[in-house]
Length: 585
Image (cartoon, rainbow, N blue to C red):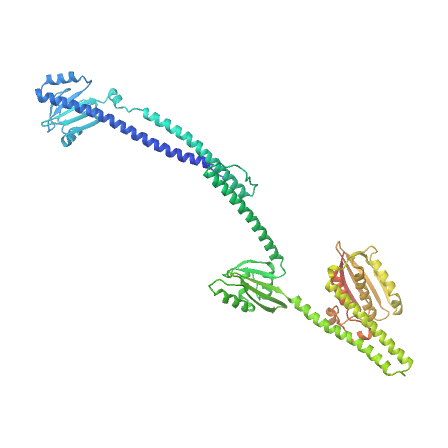
């Protein structure tokens, strides 16, 4: 369906020209009509006075010689006015004498007669004569005993005499044309300036390039236009700066690692990031769709009271007001901070400190575990050495046995310190670990050579099922520690005569998936989810007896995560343990 036709809007120049032209034309027409009517009235007045002068002549003749036809004929000859009609009427309306007819009807109802009786003089313009049947121009004068009325027929000659002079009309039209030409030129200049401003405003609104060098006339309108353009340039620059800063603030708000929301004094949200809504829903028992619903949470009652207390202060705050609480719910710990600004708007931040608190707890636990683990071999070494020193006559066989045990405990202490150092390095500086392409098949063949004697000693069959060209982008030493710690764990706890295997069961464009298994004793199901924790032992006495540090599988998990992968463990059907993990390519 086509759009209806729209009449194009007139330009400012056209509107101004039409407005001024209409006003001037109306003014000119009114003046012309006024002057025309004034000229016409003037000519009617001249003719009336002429006829009244004839009335006076008739009266003087009647006064001197009385009523007679000869006097009437003499007057008509003396005045020598074509078609002049003279009538004498008494005050009752009876016609005493008429130059055109005899025995006329009563003229008391004639308008000019009534006016003459009332005021002394009367006239009628273009009244049709009831006697002759033609239009006449009448003028009557009342005297002592009668009324004299002179009239002329309203013919072309009289009409020409009453016609106004049109020279004034021609002069008025010429003057109007000159004025319109001048106004057209003047409004054209103004229109160009307004059009420049309009085009400038349209380009600014549509975001088109702006021409700020276009010339404006050197008048008041031009000065105003230049000021407007300069003002817009400053506003445009300020707007761009404001938009840029707003975008930076909005980007910062959305990428912040804490939930942030800003509220007005009426507690309506101005802006809130997605993380704020997410954390609010974690604290709420029902879904929260808007940021201001947070004020209904009972867990934040202390924050709400703090806000209400400060908002009740009518005067402007002299400095920022701060308050924070810690909330624990649904397995998460949040630090809730509220800052009230000087204009009574305020900000609420929800910071998830669950991981921080958990790390703090784990660090405390790790410190305790390290102290406990270090204490055991040191105590053993001290005990053996004290026994040797306090018993110089100790048999050589027992002395060598104590020295051997001290060496094993010192080796275990060295392994423990090495594993702690490895974990610390992965925790504190994961981005500093250098990566390079590593061939996994070659790495596993090297590891198989390193443990060949242990495999033969325990009659263990090793199966490596992976392609020769499998390459992973990673740190060679950490990748080696993944497979070596899994292997050492299987050698230590799997038993003798078992099978240990490494199988790459899937390769994607960005990730490789592995299964490390053994056919040994396996692990009770209740321990599977915790075997990757630091210092966690399924059987503490058996672990220490076999010399483990309790950190091998924790190193494996951290190294896998550093290489963008995940890891899990489960018991195999038929016996044994199976570790499934992935590494990014």
